[in-house]
Length: 402
Figure 1: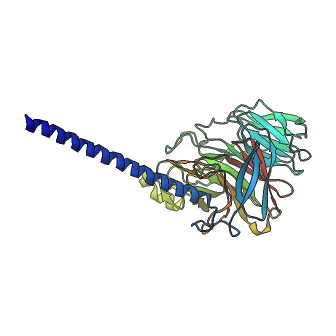
Figure 2 (figure 1 turned 90 degrees about the vertical axis):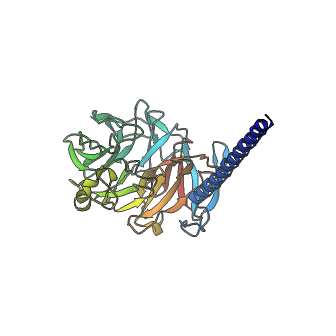
């Protein structure tokens, strides 16, 4: 009987030791994870030049900026100043400038197209507040072309008070994007180009419009398949006579793959999705497509890291800063890679395979992992100032040289 009682106590002691060891192990792991997460957040912000991805212009300097009556800190090169240009939006997404310096902004939570008049940017005016599913926009020859989830709408001769000469629905049957994807648009040589995101991750769509770029005449007629094999284009720009796009690949290969591709688009070409990614790499789901990926699909001209939430990008004009000639600015709106937040910054990069992205503005992501802001779109006004939308705080920033 005594032996049975002693065995019972010994068993309880062993269980207690195991439980204490397990608790200690879990605590130890949580501390390691917290430390790792902290280091990753600090490295993502890259305030110091001591880290692997060295910021440009010998480091970034802190600037205090008032956001909704609260002082916040952003970090950018000392040659530049950042300020709030306009506010009062709900969730501004993309922004474009006309040739006079007026800005046009899409606001998807308010279903609104805004004009920010160059004479009084502190008082933005509503152009149209009934645009359900509003996505992005493009300014071209005195007109603003707005994409919603299914329509392309043209506004002709918008005035500083928000009025306009005419409103036309050019297309009303675009395929509706799924999840949080959206259409993008560019216009060159009187041709409209609309990127339609894929409706799946790895399938081959029956409708070739998905995962493609369609072309149209300037009035929305004559729809044609222009290029295909593009999973999800986040933005498009026209450089001289070239169409440059940023394409986010499918999820699920790894935490790092596929990277975000920057592609130069040519008519009739296939850019690989869903079979290929990057520089002639074959998706592991389609190993039988190796020959196609190596010999027929177009490779990216450069890549950016996955997981930062790439949104808008643009070509940097000489009028902004002549040392950035032939470089691009990319907006990372931010996102979560498991438990590590990433992005929430603005980077600058040459469009070539050997260059690395360098930080230009950081600070929206705090050291505790919380983000107080989220940049989204970027444009340059007629004076060469950089304009950035902040979808979390409902405002526009202006970046100028000191």
